[in-house]
Length: 115
Image 1 (tube, rainbow, N blue to C red):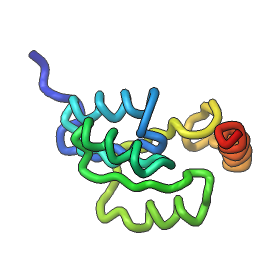
Image 2: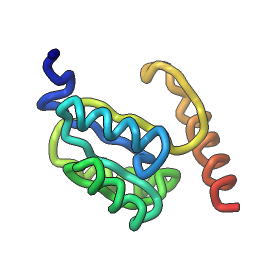
Image 3: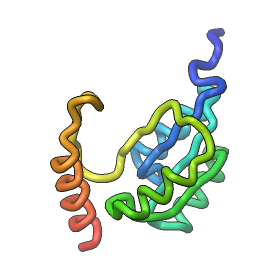
């Protein structure tokens, strides 16, 4: 049996209350990570976080830059991994990330999910 891959690491999952985000949070937790989950729906997020055994959770709209800044500003320690499953499918290495495009994709996905 191999040792867990993420022991001692902290993983933040933005959009972790369902779908791929929830499964990613489960996998990270199973691999020994302390998991912090976010989602838009407080009740759904609370259930998902309890199911995963998350260290913490925060309900807010990830397309709101002020809420996102408050969330990251309140984190007390270094974060090892950030997984974003909220918003549109925009993939790029972090160093090459086009922030404006990522924001547009987030906004587009948020508009679709509110219909």
